[in-house]
Amino acid sequence: MKYVAAGLQTRLSVMALAALAIGTSSRPLAQEPIPQPRTSGGCPVESRAFYECATAKAKTFTPPRTPDGAQCPCGSSKLLVRISLRFASAHG
Image 1 (cartoon, rainbow, N blue to C red):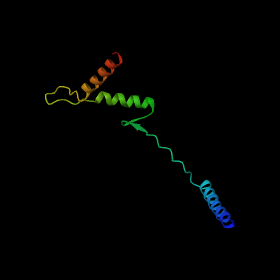
Image 2 (image 1 turned 90 degrees about the vertical axis):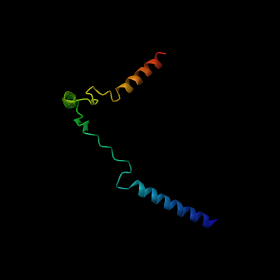
Image 3 (image 1 turned 45 degrees about the vertical axis):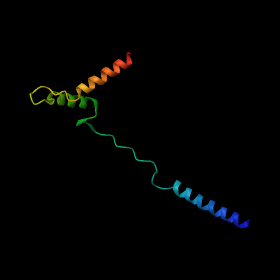
Image 4 (image 1 turned 45 degrees about the horizontal axis):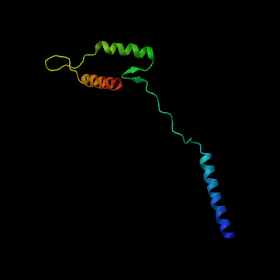
């Protein structure tokens, strides 16, 4: 019985030292914060600067065209179908 108590005391001492070492480490265990982007779509994220940049980009934007020169729908029809399906399901 005396040997069991000594073994238990040794294990508890090792666990206490491990907890002390982890608790007093100089480097925090938490993750570092994720840096926030300074731009969005090539424009600064500050409100006024973003607005000016985005409106300038919108003025120079040329949508894709089909070979015959007509504006290519390129996904706008899918968007309209999704919107109409949501409207139909919401309004029965």
